Amino acid sequence: MKKGMDYIGVVERVDFPNKGFVRVIPDCEENAADAEIRVTVKGVLEGQKVKFRLSKLHVSSKKGEGRLLEVITPAPQEVKAPCALFGSCGGCAYQSLPYEAQLALKEEQIRRLMDGVITEPYEFMPIRRSPQPLHYRNKMEFSFGNEYKDGPLALGLHKKGSFYDVLTTDSCQIVHEDYNLILREVLSLCKETGLAHFHKITHKGYFRHLVVRRGLKTGEILVNLVTSSDTKTYIGGQAEEMNFVEEDFLKTLCDRLLALPLEGKIAGIIHIRNNSVADVVMSEKTTVLYGKDHFYEELLGLKFRITPFSFFQTNSLGAEVLYSTAREFIGAVDGKLVYDLYSGTGTIAQMVASVARKVIGVEIVEEAVEAAKENAKANGIENCEFIAGDVLKVLDTIEERPDMIILDPPRDGINPKALDRIINYGVDNLVYISCKPTSLQRDLVTLQERGYRVVKVCPVDEFPMTAHTETCVLLSKTSEA
Image (cartoon, rainbow, N blue to C red):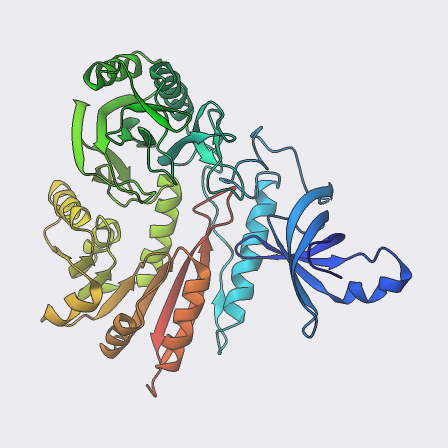
C-alpha cells in the first residue's frame, strides 16, 4: 500500500467518535498482505464497503489512516435517511441507521471504552433512549457562508469535513419546523441586502451567525442574529459602500419574523454585534430588537430562564432522562451537603436540592451563575448556593466540606489539578456526568488510581442521529483508600 493511493475495503467496527476500522480488500494476489492492514476511516458504518484514499501508513504496526471517498455498498441495516442533505451536512452521522441500531452502536462504543479502563467488575446499564429521536434540539447555531467559493449566500451548517463551506439546511430534521421557517426567512432577507458573509480568512463581511433557541415544553423562541460592523460589499477584493441602513434592515427583520406562521411564539429577537476574528458566537454589543432577552423551558417540573449565552442541555426531553438517571445514582442525600461542580445554569443542583440539606454549585460562566440564582429563586428553592469562578480556584474558598460531589464538566473533562482537589475531599460517592466518553475514560483512570471504584455506568442518548452520547457514572470510595 502507498500513501495517496485509493483502496477498497469493508468496515469491521466503528468506535467513538464515528471512527471506522476498515479491512482492505487486496486488488490482486501479489498484494494479499494488504488485508492484514487495518485503516482508520471516519464517517463510515459497520458493514459498508467503501473506497478511501490512504493518507498515513504505519508499516510496522500494520495500521493506516484514510479519507472516505465513496460508499460502494451500504451496510445491511441502513435505511433511507429522513434528511435529503444527510451525507453532505456535517451535523448528523447516523441518520441512515434505524434508531434502535443507533442505540446499539452507541452502547457498544461506550462499553468498549469503559471496559478498556475500568479495573474491577462493575454494572453496565443498557443505554437510555431519547424520548424524541427527531426534532428534539432546543438550540441551533447556524453559520453564514457559501456552499462553494464565491457562490451565493448560504445559511446553515458546515459541509461534512469542511471548515469553510456552508450548506443551507432549511429542512433540518433534528429541529422543530419553526427553525426551518425562521432560517429561510432570515436568509431571504439577508440575500436582498447584497451584503457578504463574514469571511474567516479576510475578516471582512457582515453576516456571521443565526442562533435560534426554542423551548420544547413552552414553545417560546429566541432569535439571535450575529453580525459584524462591516456593511461594505467586496467586488474583486475592493470595498464598495452599500446603500444599506442597518436600522431599517433590523426593523424589517423583526416584521418578517413576527409574520411567520410559527407553531411556537417568538419571545425575543436580538441583534448581537461581534467584530472578533475568532469564529465563535460572542457579543461586543447586544441589542433587544423585540420582546425580551430570554425565554423559558421546563424540566422535571422546574422552570428555567435561558438567555442567548446560557448553557442548557440541547435536548429537553433527553435531559429529563439524563438528570433522572443522575438523581437515581445520587440516591439518598438527606441532611447532606452536595457540591455540583461545573453547574451551568444550576439544573442538576435544583433537582437535587429537594432531597439534600444544601447544594453548592460552581460554574465559571458568570452569566450562567446569575441565571442559576434567578432560576432557583423562581422555583422557590432556598437551599442552593451558586458561585462564579474556576472550580480549581473556587474550591479553596469554600469552608463547608461536601458529603457528595456531582461532576458535569465540559467536553475536555476535568483539569488534573482540579480533579486532585476533588479527590482529596474523600467523599464516599461521586457522580460523573460526561458528554465526551474519551475524556471520561481518562479521568476514570485517575479516579481509580486514587481509590475510587466504578460502581455502575449508564449511557444516555442525548444526541440522536449524531455520534455523541452522554454517560452517567457512579463511583464509590474503596475501604482501603
